[in-house]
Image (cartoon, rainbow, N blue to C red; front, side, top):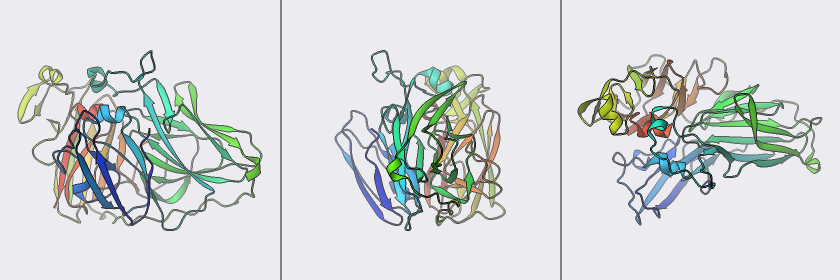
Length: 408
């Protein structure tokens, strides 16, 4: 693991047959790709479950270049936690000026004393707290990675947080580095990276990194309180030394995403409640109002607008082409990584933990919302169908933090 790297060029067609060889039903979600609703991989909304021994054919065009990923979207906490995911790279029609392109899938694993995956899936403590986090970090399925760079070489790092729930603060080498894209969508201008770069579960960042001529080997490290855990070692390949470019990179070519209107056509509140140290006293589950004890017995600990799990009515119904605003208020004691299917949304005041891009809007499909924070997102409702909006801390999703919207 991870699963096979899928690679296509912008505008090309991808056809994938999912064959289910496990003992649970499953489905695949194509995270961040603005595709037809029927291919989104949500059981009970866009497709039936793929039963053990059965198959499902996914077939879609990729409209946007960038870094994306695919993962199981049924029993997600366990299936993703066991490694059922992979990376999807969509290359630009014109390649940027880099010497190499590296995919770095970052994950954590909860292992028992024998080194096997710990069987504590569905743990209520995980559900009601920060989610399932592990005791072993990997890069592309290994404990660490080594990349060779010659002096003056500039490389593209495609950083993907594929963890169930772990928020990843990352320290890059103190070398020239530029943040080029987030969640597959290019920034209007490259942003110099200084200090740490934070990726929530499901988020991606494309970084261009250049090795200076006068430095020794360096690391990309995970920051954990007062210590650093090296994940990627950048070693010197003297045979590849070259003259430095002297200039920062040109911006990546924008993807064909229609901008939001200056004024939203509608604004919808979304209130998060629940979890440990939360104030969830009751919520509606499958049409029935239940108190906290009854919800906990069902393994449910979170609500969105007083509803637990996917409600019968959408959070909002949007006319195609309209600009929609969702104002998310996190009244819980925990951060959440909210992911919208089928669309990217604009953020003007926050990068969701990934640096400071200046004043231009940033497009994301997953945003970190800190405890007690309120954050507004806007999106152009240009992709028809029924689309999920849920926390990508997968234990929170399993514990009830799921809603949906309709674009007609």
